Amino acid sequence: MSGDLPAVARELWVLLEPVHDVTYFTPQARAAHEVAGLRGFWRGYVATRAAPLGPVGVAPVTAVFHNFAPAFLARSLPQVWEMASPERALAARAAGAEAALDAHLPDVLAEPRLAEATAVLRRAVEAVEWAGRPLGAANAVLPWPEEPLRALWHAATVLREHRGDGHVALLVAEGLDGVEAHVLRDAEDASSTVTKPNRGWTDEEWAAAAERLVGRGLLDRAGGLTERGRALRVSLERRTDELAAAPYAAATPGELAMVAEFLRPIARRLIPGAIPYPNPVGAPLP
Image (cartoon, rainbow, N blue to C red; front, side):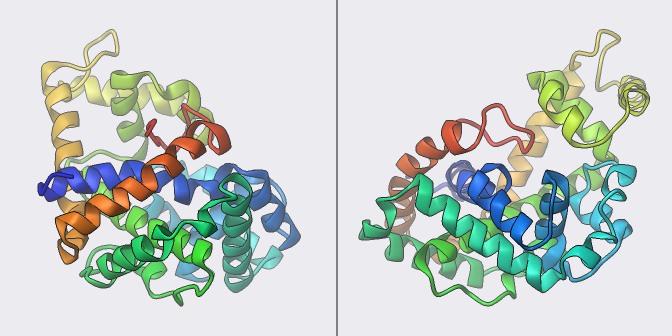
């Protein structure tokens, strides 16, 4: 693996994202959420992802998630905390993730590099400065799991949310709201058929966002990226990688290469497989 830390951060995001995403897409995780009282996909998603923040309402969750329609999140919040407390949602999240990883990766517990790779990732997490990273920080202060699969999932989750917080900060700095960010990305990779039904924006809101982006010179009238829009997309991804890179300075290039080598076959078994592709979270093929 290259010593270029932003490139390392991007590669490890691609490999860690599937480990985190089992909590959204697998029957094992959904079953655990339902046992906790979180019936329905979106109640489980919203409650388990927001639970590290405590029993918060729709406004702070909209702020940290960024790309969901507020009205869509309001279908779950704050009522979901009457179905399951944040503590109960967190317990269900951990149990479901462990069950999913065990079911889809039955041989990983016997893999000698599991403990070594997780230790490197934990060192990366512990090196993070959390200012301005609300969702990552809320996950980082949770107790570190003792169970090996839960520990791997926890490391993947903290680093994933750290990256996401940085990406949201960049979108806000560029004046892109949640729906505009989706429309801009869709102009590049035609992801709206997967994303649009899963983020709650109406056709009218989507069209209005496209019109605003045309007005800014980021989209053309046909809905395609302009040269300026394409440059912004490239810049956003590059800068997200740069902001996500700092934790990995806590490890050596050899350690990071070992982690990537360990994770690569895991990620390729999870996507596609346990996790659909394409998918609304934007996880790429490993």
